[in-house]
Length: 259
Image 1 (cartoon, rainbow, N blue to C red):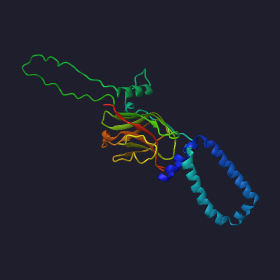
Image 2: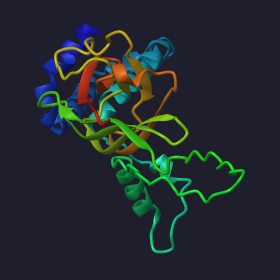
Image 3: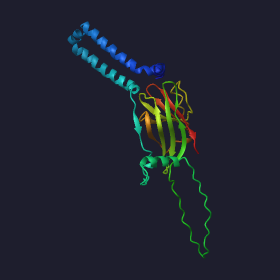
Image 4: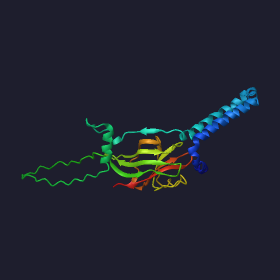
């Protein structure tokens, strides 16, 4: 994997010229096919078409699949826009839309609201009536940690906010907002004790306790990732966008405690 990663980093400076290289490859293939036709190679292939087909078909399928899997992210973007889940169950006032509710809920999660009420004066009575114990439920999620995505190098770029929330029910959620990263094949979202960033290798974030939260849903947009309740958030210091096939880091968001 490290060899592929070194090659990927070596060709990173050529990324701005990807369209020119793609056009050059098409021209080269067209010229090669014209040359082959001129040399009557197609007649030889036709005479041995069964054998040629048995050899060429699987090679062509594998080549096309690899070319699409590894090359298509260089030319395409995937945009995701998921709602803030803790706002999904909220009642939407008539003068607000769902997007405004999400903004308010996310804002409340970052604001502490201390309450200091005076002890009520109890009326005199021979047998005081005990007050019921009421435990109010939180009305908004709490921000546990937050950080900003950073560029790794001139090719691997990332921006946006990574926020870990604890919901009113105790559930944990990682949310990426205003997020954008250079697209790549099979990108994953990783929670790690590693503080980052370091663009030389994808291995440093794999310190003890690292967790793969799954494939990146899109290289652009707002998105949510569930964190299991048994995860110790206190030990985690970064969110990493990791290219699994090449073992290369595309972007890192160092996390800071918000408590």
